[in-house]
Length: 99
Image (cartoon, rainbow, N blue to C red):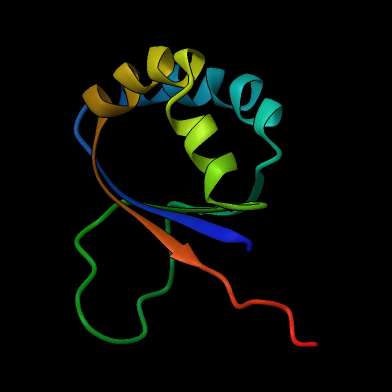
């Protein structure tokens, strides 16, 4: 079942985050993920949103996401992401196909 990873980021060190971002796709493309959205200026329609960026990704299933997020390659670049931004990351299950 498809899963969606949603990251809400508050930048703390832009240079560190930019280093992460520069290396992200080389790792991401190995794990069957799809980048659905990455927006530094989402339009807030209701409530408060105290973040600077929203990223949405999809993976074929939870195992694929975990393979990506726990891979040595991602752990290496994630140091810059963690140094560069405070994050709330959600893993959301998609709907099972009807039928």
